Amino acid sequence: MQDTLVVENKYAKDERIKARNVNDTFESPDFYQIDDLLDEEHKIVRKSIRDFIKKELTPIIEECAEHNVFPRWLIPKFAEIGAFGPSIPEEYGGSGMDYISYGLIMQEVERGDSGLRSMASVQSSLVMYPIWKFGNEAQRNKYLPKLASGEMLGCFGLTEPNHGSNPSGMTTNYKDMGDHYLLNGAKMWITNSPEADIAVVWAKNEEGRIHGLIVERGMDGFSAPEIHNKWSLRASVTGELVFDNVKVPKENLLPNKSGLGAPMMCLDSARYGIAWGALGAAMDCYETARRYSIERQQFDRPIASFQLIQKKLAEMLTEITKGQLLVWRLGKLMNEGKATTAQISLAKRNNVEIALQTAREARQILGGMGITGEYPIMRHMMNLESVITYEGTHDIHLLILGRELTGVPAFV
Image 1 (cartoon, helix red, strand yellow):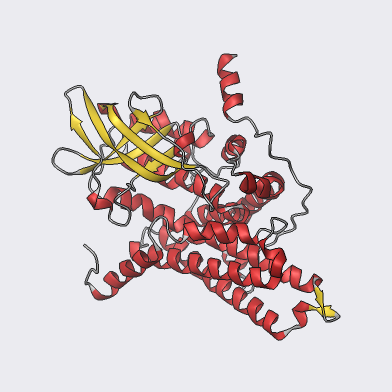
Image 2: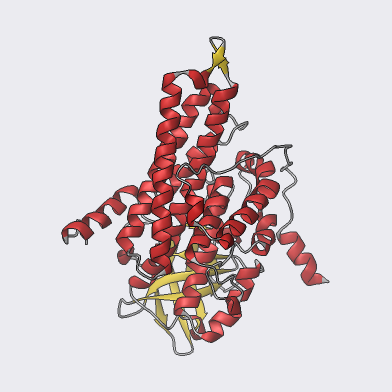
């Protein structure tokens, strides 16, 4: 009985959040009939997630963003619909889906809110993925089913206060103390950290080699203070990870890969999800602006009749359609194990940029109403200002692509 009470309290609904009576009739634009490229499973997955977002998230998301509340009570429901670890094998609690299904899940969740997509993306690509890919059987069996079911929430510790775009310069380190490792250092801008039960932390050993360790909430010397006063991703929770002589059991070291390439593989998976997710935000802004333009009257006619409004809508749809084709092809490459880091960088950079531009154009179509919580556009715009920076800034992704094109790195 005590365990049940703990779970209920942990995911208790914030009393400040009241559901709105919202008629969410969203359907994604499909100007090039991309649905014909999807199989029935893809469409079923997309519909189930879209229905979930309409029912559970749309009525509360504006209140969550306004009050800076992470709707932690939705975590078990995200798990029920398969949003955690969709590409992880079923034997470990995942859904064993392909990467296009994973992308569609991220698209639909971010259509609801980038912060909630961040939460799910971290859980899937940055916590479950490395444990599955780099962990041993004992670690997989211990953590993955609980992460998939939402019993555990995880976070990913790579970025440090002084090392963002240059993760190889990290100073977080651990020493071999014989029967355990001693971990010291700090991580910054970590999605989920204040609520997380475990953290996959990247740190250097005494030889300077980077390894991943699983750090559990409650370990002495481990704290995860929350970062406050965010103007972006306000419906998700962000914090630090602080390690002060934390004793980490040796069995918590991820044994199957070391070096910076290990966390970079995780980021490839997460950036792929972002490329799909950003399209969800773009679609929501476009569809909101299109419908508003038909309803809004000025000079005795709907503003949709004006050339400049039609120009904005046409350009939004064009960029969204290009982005849809881009991620569909990337998904096929991911399924075949052929996608490269540079290809993923191109998609992440492009689709987040067009999403942010779509949000800005949509806000102009709505005029003053575009800055209010009556519509989702300003919330998406603020969120996307973070999405364009995290997991590789806009400029860093350009340089990743530039290195691929020229063979000459602009950063080392």
